[in-house]
Length: 180
Image (cartoon, rainbow, N blue to C red; front, side, top):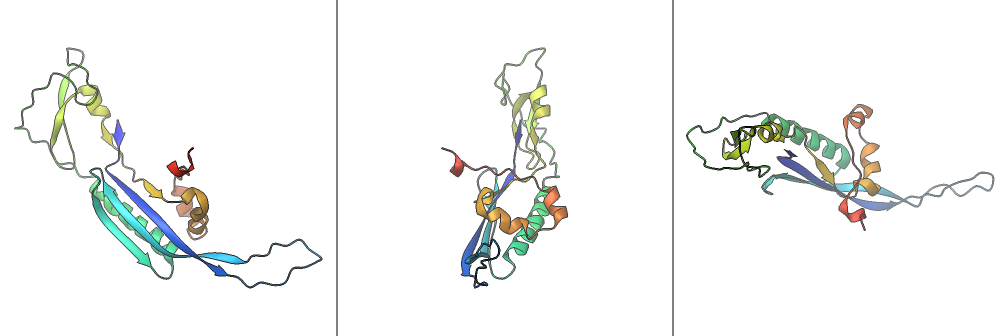
């Protein structure tokens, strides 16, 4: 089983600005651009697995996209460094459970019980079967969920970031707003 200890939610706000361009040509095909979207602000929330707001940033000003990308990189580095911690289990806590708190199966000779704990706090979570405990991992991955990234906002970000950074990103352009 995998879960995410933290998650980032972000949104970009844009305004449209009128564009005054050259007159259409009768000789060539053309597109007449009338407006351009200018990113003017963003908000970022870092939420933990208990749905607590750990960090919030609102930015309004120049270079919105480059500031957002830099903020996301800094937050990611700090969170991933924090996620490396491993607080030892409190050996004095006693639990009396006859089944795994992860899968619900009863313990037996073939299904040995071990003590499962939170590596960030040291808190004992319960007894788990050895297999479930070994598979129970916090992913070293920080999801960033952006409003309208699968729609219009993605082009604002992708045209501003370096190709190296773009290659390292894993984008899953799906959200619940697009589902029937």
